[in-house]
Structure formats: C-alpha cells, structure tokens
Length: 520
Image (cartoon, rainbow, N blue to C red; front, side):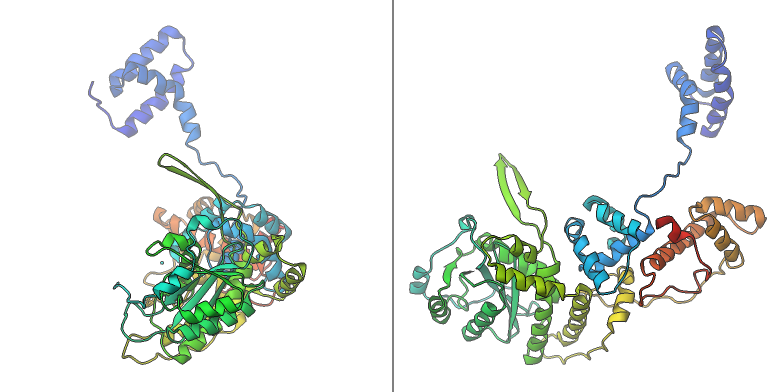
C-alpha cells in the first residue's frame, strides 16, 4: 500500500500511538494496529515491531558520553615521541616508547604526569595508529650500465641465495651501492655504500665521491672500525664496482668471507634492499648529489643517522614463513632496535655490550634528530640538476626551537627537508568576524569549572544567555575551539616544570586550570 505521510509525520504517529499500544489489552492493540497501517501504509508485522521497539529505538538514539581513556595529554605526548622517532609506524613505536620516554626525560625535554606515563605505556599499537591517524593525514628509469665483473673472479666467489642464511652470528653483512643521481645517469654523482648485518639489522652507510673500486676498499676499512663486532662476511651483488680483484684481495687478506647473489635476483639480497629504502632513501631522498662538499655533508649525516637508526629505530624481523597453497603466513619477532638485538645475542662478547650500553646512555634521540634535520636541510640546498648551481643554505635552528616546534610539525606536512614539496603561501588574515570574541571569557570560566563539559552543552548555554547572537551552524566552530583549548592544556601539563615550549597566552586563560588535575 502506498504511504500517504512523510517520514516526520510517521514518527509523530508512532509516538502518539506507541504509548497507547503498550497500555491497552489485546483487542485494543488490534485496533491501534489497524489505525497505524491505514495512516502510514506499513506492513502489519512491521507496524507491530515499530510500535513495540519505538521506545528502545528512541533511547538508543540518545548520545552517551563516555570518559576517554587516552585523552589529549596522552595524544600530545604520543605525537611528540612519534616525531622524535622519525614518524615510524604504531607497531614499531609501541616497542620503543619506554626507551624514548626514559631518554627524553633524562635529558630534560619533558616530564610526564604519572597517569599520562601509565597510559602511554599501556596503549596498544592499534590505538597508536588510531590516535595518530589524523596527524599522519595532515602531514602529505633508464637501465644502468655497469662494469661486468671478471668471469674467473665470479667462479671463485660462491653464490648465496636468500634461503642460505641459517642463523649466522653477528658480523655477516649484505652490502650494496646506492646512486644519488636524481634519475639522470649521465655524469658523475655521489654514491652510498650501505651494509647491514643480517642477524641484528645493524646498518652502516658510507659516502663515495665517485663510483670507484679503490674508494670501496677504503670504505670497507672504515666499516670494520664502525661495526660493534668483527666483520666476518660480505655478500654483494654482481656489480663490477664491488666484485673486482681489489675488493676480493682485501677480503681474503682480512679473513672476510665473500659471497655474491644470483644475477637479476634481488630477493637474494632482501635485507640490504630493504635498508636502501628504509634508511638511505628515507634520509636523503632521490635528489642528485655531486661534489666533495656534498659527499662531506652526506658523511656527517650518516655519522649521526647510524646512532639514531641503530639505537632508536626498531625494525621487524621475520621468524618463520609457511605456505599453504596460495596463502603465505608470516610470523615476526617483536620489533627491536639493532642495539637491543646485539645485547640479546649470546655470540657477542660482554665487553662489546658494555661499551654499547655506555654509548647508549649518553645519546639523546632529540638532539640526534635535530642534527639530522639540519644536515638534511643543507643537503636539500646542495642537491642540484646537472649544469645548475648550488642553492643557498638556510640558517640553522637551535635545539630549543626545534623541540618547541616538534609537536606541531605534522601540521606542516612532510618534516624531512629532502622530501618536502614547495610550501604554498598560507593565509594569515580573517575573512569573517570572530563570533565568539565577546563570549570567550565566559566560556573559559565554564571550562575551568567543568573541564569535561561538552561543546554542545556550552553552545546551548550561549544561545540562552545571548538571544539571537548565535546560529546553529556555529556549533562546529565552538567544538574546534574547545578541542584546541584542551589540546593546549595537555601541552601545558606535559611541559610543566620544563624549560622549553611555551603556550600562547592569548589563547589560554592565565589563571590555574583544572585540566591537569584530572590527569594527575
């Protein structure tokens, strides 16, 4: 049957007849049903369900406000640690939160309230990703011709495939060359020799001014001094710059086992290929770097990043992999930093572990990240296409200014200068009059008395106190203002007693606010 009334009218009819339907006897219920079907055109069974469940539906439609477990203070602290950890994923960040909190508090970067610390340590990886979702959303070839290695030399170097790594001790590394040519193969450019230990994930990067086998040998000498354990083996691809007589003789003279991968099988070097993207390209991007000055700057960047990556950047390691038809099931170890894996290894001497512990206690992750960002800015100015001149290097930023801006970097998008797009001009003027300019002092008083008050309730009070002064469409503006106020109060709670970031006195009431008392 065709319905003769609108949706709003049907709801009103349900409210009027529903009360009578639930308080009359069986014969009268039938008459009420006949009346409802005649008015609305409902099917009789649907009319019975609608009349019986109308009260439950109305009750479930009411908005219920539940207290938040992870409030704005926890989210603010999480953003700060996420930025200090170079924006890693929630699963990796969960594993390194205690270490970052301990290190940053020890160096005086912040001091967390006990309840905020407890909740920060208890947050799950899935909740971390949920809390940082909006933050992440706001933050935005030609074939290379290589020298072929000597055929007789290749016969002397055994092949190692991806399945031949069987619980090797720390010291067996995969190595590769990364070209910083900006996608242009003509001309010379800086290269990076990258080596990663298969057992612990310890990664070292060394710059080469040009692609030359003599420089590779010199880089290997430096590599042996930087690794915390002896270099026992090297696995290269079939690049002639790596697979040559000079490198072969150096490895044989120093007792280093030399192996190579199969041609055109990049999966044989899966560990180093992953680090080429996760470490090198993440640090310096895909720009073109050439010249001694650029190589020297890149070397300074690698000296800082090796400490930051190996001591503070956790990574996942595959434990087992099983195939069932087309389905592949992978199981991973808990994310851990290379430094932690070295300490867990029973094949590394205790003296080496003690030296690493001393070195770890003296490291400040925020200071390291600040130095990395400064050098990335310099590299960004030095990157150039062929035939162009270097750009001007911008002025450096102090550690205090860097720490103050750290929680807000996500609003500007990409934080790495080497990956940042040209910023668009921002608007700094208002196009409309602030509707809450006169009412904001009263709102601050209400928020001081009731920190958990909902913006909708505050808006209803304003409508009553200022008849005709506000429109329903301005509720969303007030909700953003209240959320921003709570965000600033959370920052004030985190940085309480710490010299550094300050809140804006124009946007926060100077009187003591009870927001911190809720969390302490």
